[in-house]
Length: 148
Image 1 (cartoon, rainbow, N blue to C red):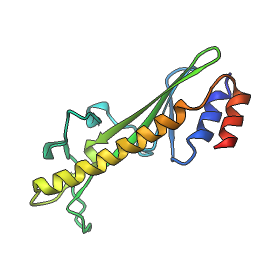
Image 2: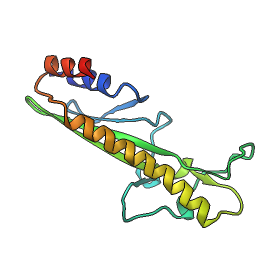
Image 3: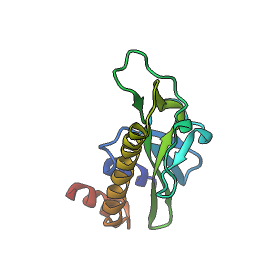
């Protein structure tokens, strides 16, 4: 059973991960590889909640030609049971890494929302593909990974 996390990493291997272990049966992965992110600085993607300029807490990069940057992460949590695994995929906006320079406009905000929405679309694609896999045991999961 301990090989499940390794097999899951193979499945999700196209994304660069940072692993955080809270106990032996639950793991947290994300594509955000900097220092641990404070949960107060994260906004969970929600169709009812659109970004506002006050969400962008990062310092603008003066050398950048961009007027704003949206930083988001796709997170993976999983629980391993006797003969199954439950994977949760989430999309989060990273407030302290996202920034806006002078003269923010509603058009630019809509553009930045689009970047966050694209991250959610990718999360949905990952959820869809993971839902098709059968995690009955490490050997069967390995075969599923090889088939992808």
